[in-house]
Image (cartoon, rainbow, N blue to C red):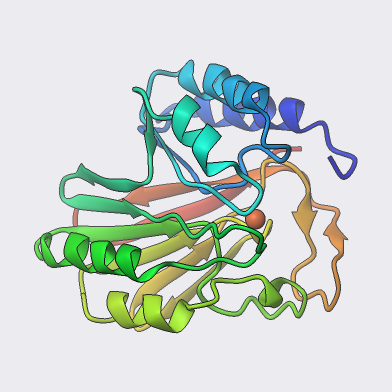
Length: 229
Ligand SMILES: [Fe+2]
């Protein structure tokens, strides 16, 4: 895809992360896991990501087949969306994919579930993950396909001071900003990257990448991006 062998770049990224002496305790896969909505694609993903035997939390992106993903990636060690508690942290994974649109949307029912998930963990630190960016990336074409009801989403998270971070995929580039004391973080793709700040669709020359998220007991978050040459 776009000149990258996505299978090889995923394998390289995964091997790189697993070779770290501290190793990952879990994997957060923030959508667009398979481009062609094929069962074989999800089965290959399951084969690769299932090997380390650590939890793999998945959520769908605009290019995913939600049904196929749920079917293939719901059994241990995979988890499809929802709440996952790793005390003192709670992860909340949302499904912002909406049919026939590359932009994202969170239906009222999902916003209610988010509100419930936050109201029942006042003593936790929370990381919310979804596929689409809930704030502008400063890239004209990309910002036409962000989370369409970001205002409604942020109106929920803004009510809960235990929300420490919101993390997304979709934008194929690294970014890290602070909004009301909440870290807003995007992660590079394990295949091709998009050029930050571009008016129109443009690829970046950066290699595949991934991000470490170190969720500290005091609610702070250490993070770094790795580019896999
Ligand atoms: Fe996407």
